[in-house]
Each structure stands twice: as structure tokens, then as C-alpha cells.
Image (cartoon, rainbow, N blue to C red; front, top):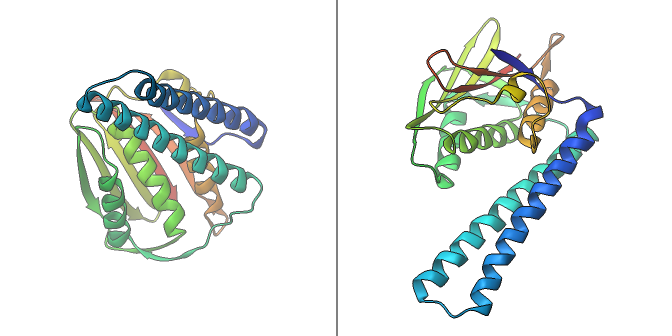
Length: 219
């Protein structure tokens, strides 16, 4: 089953509210761990573990707030795309390095086939989107997450695939999954890439052999 994702402007408030709610919960979780360190004596290893967990929670909250701000700017058209020629091999390596520096899952990160082409796109925003997709996939993958870029007359297809359980039905069914700011951003960003009357799009699918595919297609 395949779904073309990208919430409408009318649904944006719900997406934003869900993101704020999740961020609040994550911050409260971090505060509870810090408070546990303050209130109860613990061994050095226990204290370090609690502080590490609190750090991860705050880091996730910061990332989510960055996404919320980016979504708000996109919906208000305050963050237009900057289209520049981008070598696809350079983009793939840039994304691999950025995702690798934040990688927390046990799955391997693989860069598969990459077209030897130069494509017009907003390199930084597309890279942000792909890093987020890779990191999300790493949390569900069993053994491997892969990035591939293929170009033909139909456009540039950028795939992030994993061998996890796949997308839940409510995502592929076109409903708004809770906290889908990343998908909102990806869909809006893809649509902002336009050439010769064609717009980019985001497609989500579960693979026949298992796993999920996040695909950005740019004109």
C-alpha cells in the first residue's frame, strides 16, 4: 500500500499541537530524571545514566522544537526554498555524515546507488529532511537503513528504506499520525520544488518483503 503524504494547511494546527504536546512530555521526562539525581543519593554510574537519559530527552525536545518552527515558517511561506545545482553524490555523502553523527540505533546505515547527476534543489532543507527520515528509520529497523538516489525523465527519486515493521495503517491511510511534523515538513518541502508545472511529492509505502520506504520525488 502506498500513500502520498503531505498534510493540508487546514490540518496544520493539529500537527503543530501534537508536536508541542510531545515536546512538553519529553521535557517533563527529562526534568523527572534530573530531579531524581537531585533528591536521592546514587552511585556515580546511576547518576551518569540518569543524566545521559535526561540529555537525550532534552536533545529530542530541541530537535522537535526546531521542526515545529520550520513547519510554522513553511506554512507562512517565511522559509522559501533556495534552489541551487546540487551534485547528488555530494548530497548523499553530506547526509550520511550528518546522520552518522547522530546515529543511535543498532542498524547499519548504507548508502546504495546514487545517480551521478547534478539536480536543482534546496540542498540544506532536503538534507535536513533526509537526515530526519534516516534517524526515524533507524529507530524501527532491524538490521539496515538504506539511502538511494535515482534520476530519470520522471524526476529525482530519493528513497530511505528500512527492514523494520513498516508504517502503521493510519499513516498509509492518509490520516494524520500523532506528532507527524517530520512528514508535514517533508510533504510541504517536496511541493515547494516546482519545475515546468510539476511539483515534488512525498510517498510512503510498505515493501512487499517487509520494511518501509520513504520516497521524495523532485521534478
